[in-house]
Length: 233
Image (cartoon, rainbow, N blue to C red):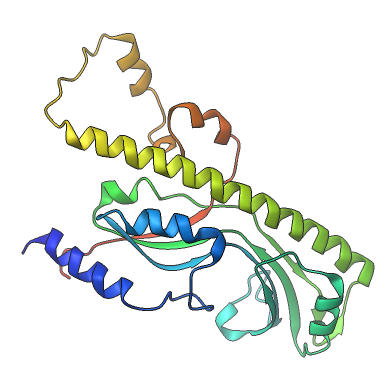
């Protein structure tokens, strides 16, 4: 079986469908990023979210919320104001949770080496319970405070999307150049530049390259979920 042909067919089927996110379409802030991935023959996206603030009503299991079993009281991909949350909370009957979720991408990859560039996750989120069994457990002042934090995270998230796009673009360009010269002679292992590259953390290649490494050294990365094209597809 020609795996490349099979993946190409699988990709065509995937891209012919609507985005599998709740919204059903690609958010404006990640259109270029999604296009960048889908233009590469080894990738295609199935679901995406540029980042959002949501208010869920459901049951708390520890501090984890299963969104598919919850009622979505409010969802926005833009900065949120207190009045909108207060109005939405009036519809809560269970345990309402305010969340900020950063960039999320679900990407199908042709093979493992393609997925390694994208296999990164984020801790840039926020999740706070506001009510219990329909009763508000915090003050409006505290909700306003939480929204200031969530809105700041939303703005920071946009900057991270742009930074990630630039890093990914550079990484893919470098990969293209490398693949176009497969027979190029490898430098002597005793060469200092070769030794320096060997010592680099291989995970850093997926986050950024060369001059971008230091910029993201202590930064959280966007959440990317990757799936490898199966052998028995």
